[in-house]
Amino acid sequence: MMFDKYCIEKILNGEKTVTRRIPRGRRPAVPGKIHKLKADRTSKTYGVILITECDLDLVKNIDDDEAKKEGFSSRKEYIDYFMDINDIDILSDYDLLWRVEFELL
Image 1 (cartoon, one colour):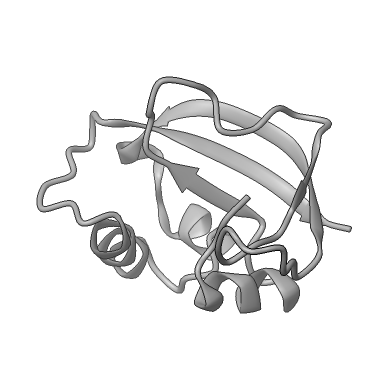
Image 2 (spheres, one colour):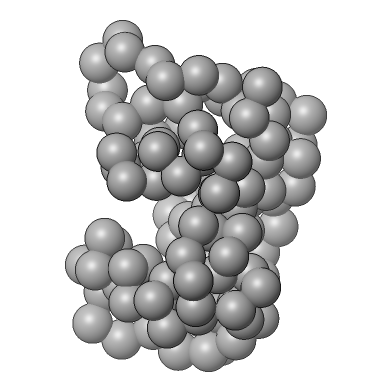
C-alpha cells in the first residue's frame, strides 16, 4: 500500500494506524492481508502492515480521535492534508471514504 514519506514516518513511529482512500471502483485492502509499505512503484519497501479493518465510512465521522489515528493533531489538520494530497477542492461530510485500519508488523 502506498503512502507519502510523511505518512510512512508516522507509521514507523507508531503514530498512524488508519488511512483513508477515495473509492475508485474496488476495495483498497482486505482484512487479514499483509501489504508492503511503499512510497512509490519501485521495489523499495519500508516494512509491512497487516490490514485489520476496511470499511466505507462518512467524512462526518472523522473527529479529532480519528485524526490522531491518521497521525494528525486535529480533524481540520487531517482534512486539509487529505484534500491537498488528493487534489480535492470540496469534501462533504456525506462523502464516503474507505477507512483502512492496520498495524505495523
